[in-house]
Length: 400
Image (tube, rainbow, N blue to C red; front, top):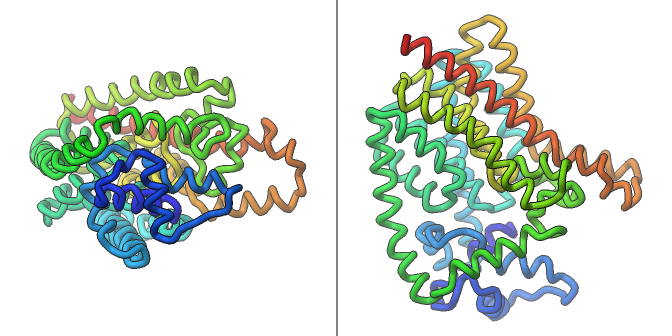
């Protein structure tokens, strides 16, 4: 629960009227609560005392910070589990209209391989469940108030997980556009007070936030996407294209810009088609499947964010029910994406690497680095391109 500790510490610091983005303030408060680590565990101290998300997250996390650590951690785990299980249930409701057994199998695979996300405690673990619930409520056109609350919560908690889904609804028009505007209005209303409060206590928080991000993304840091650090990520492989492109050139100035340059045209194509076509519900699922994949590619994400791939299940079920060659391509790519983003799969890989008794030099060599950094982003890129291609074809056919 290291990610949750970071959330809890920074939020509690804000409650105590100190700077939540200043590591010294957070560390002092953390140790005042009885937490201590050996002097040689500086990496762990950095991890739990440097916040890397904008102040909007405090609109969600402050109630947890008002609880004792044990109660807050338990409630956080319960929130993650309930939201994600509800999201999976809603995805099965839609998928069962086309292929109920296949939908249940795909969702069961996600749950079986991905249950360790409960113990990371990252905001993304909660965010993907909230997005799934919001999508289900909007497309069912039931419990839409709950859907708006969930989407607004996802936007303030981790906008780079939910932002593209929200934008898709905005462009799709009709009732989905209304729900998107309502979600944004609610997110803005709850975020503004905590932004003003944070700015009052910490006028320099933007600069401190950037410094915290740099502390994690430097070479050898926790979030370094380079191939030499890939094995250190363990079961939390990075999903973004930076991990793939760093094998070509391990330079942040190259792989950060290249990741955006590769995904921007694909997102632009999807946006233009959605704005023009105003897709119906069956076609909407194909667009959401593409968005779920592309969300994970341009900027930093990890495997727990990839549970957003539950949005691909109804699209896969739809293509499977239609028959033809596309059904097998959809099933193969969707299943492969779930396998490479499953924490238990990477646990097995790590055990196999350890039992090979490889030397430290080999473990940090290009071959093992490529093994841990290439499969996830490459699979997600292919999956996203496939669903985008099918989505564009359907929209053009409907328009004609």
